[in-house]
Image (cartoon, rainbow, N blue to C red):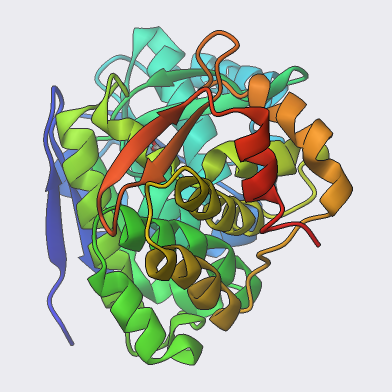
Length: 358
Ligand code: GLY
């Protein structure tokens, strides 16, 4: 069996992301000094959380297991309040810790509760989806959703450790794996083209968690994210590149009332961002068309209804990454050369949109 890989994340509160088989059982050393550890999970992966809790017996005097609600619904003020109440009744003190087990929604919510409980307690993440492993659990962004939009309430609160256990992928539904792939492809375009070469060499393998390149895709994507957030935890500059494809993607999710998987919306958003850069004269034809080719090969959507542009424009204006009323897009000036396009004209946006319109 291959050894675990450790990817260090720097910045004000450094930590390691450990990738490998069985690493979910190795959290005890990073939770030293805790009297109580609360292992909080999506009930869909309760068995994984139970095993994590068992591995922590002995590291803390008391290990408490809690389940939240499943899926995106967990990112609510009500679930945060329920968890705060549970922590209050334990009580979970400043020297104690939380462990989140689940997809990106679970790690976002538990991370937010960790950021706010007693003004900040330690949290370790055990992500159980591809999206969680390569994106949500790494980088310290936490958040919850309110009626006005997704992730509008949140805090930066880096975890003390992230255990990316490849064994948990065995039970991941294939659609959940594919939902995480656009973040991997995004990373290929903004920073690590070897990812694109690996996917293009065998697209079928890339669509499976047990495919030959799964681990390499995960590790490469995490390495890029770790480097970016090490330099810019609070998204004051460089971190913005991780938003490639997300401006239109978020507007699609909003228009679909969040019934579209995030990855599908980002997939269309990546093709649109490439078209925008090409229309603006910043990106060559071959790199732009590579976006649709690779995403099509993975069975991901790359088109969206032609008449949706006015709704999407409205959605992009309220995106939390917009500055005032100026739209702002991460674009490419070449492969692995991300830049920013600010306040594009309506004509330019419409020309680019015509390339994703169905
Ligand atoms: N998911 C984008 C970021 O973490 O900045």
